[in-house]
Amino acid sequence: MSAENRDGWLLLDDDGLLRQCSVVTCRGTGPGGQKRNKTSSAVRLLHVPSGISAENDESRSQHINKLFAIRSLRLKIALSVRCAAGPVGIAPGANSDKFPLWVARVLDVLQSVEYRLSEAAPAIGLSTGKLVKELAKNNSVWQMVNTERTNRGMGTLRS
Image (tube, rainbow, N blue to C red; front, side):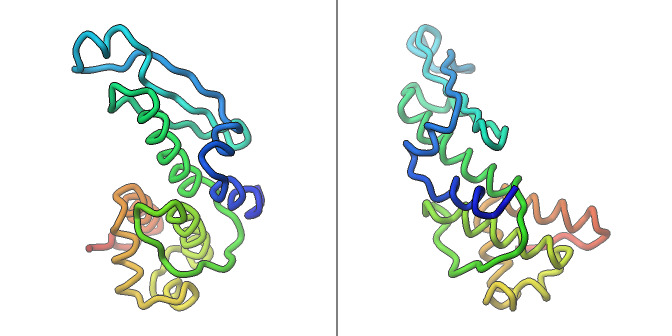
């Protein structure tokens, strides 16, 4: 998998990314009353080029669930697809559309230095402390980095 493919997927607008997906709607689970039990508001997306899937059924609105599923899919692509380390850029906010791309590039750098933050931080252009704070902004990212560090016999990070 090349960085151009992954970065291209992450830079697509929602409609563009959705065109690359198989979309399935179904009934949601859990509480929500009669509407939830009778309508297909849950959304499952399968990103065909990468094979990565995401789903959402938090809302009674199919439209809202689709938006949240797309957001989740972007982050899953960023967490799953590794490429050769390249330019990272400035950290966007955790709710920014550019956050998954930044995460993907940071994880590429971290993987290239075996998840040693003291070596990754200068390559990313941040202090080690600032890098830790940026990684801690998203629980999925935080867990993945700590899992990778544990797998390499390193201590977990504390925010």
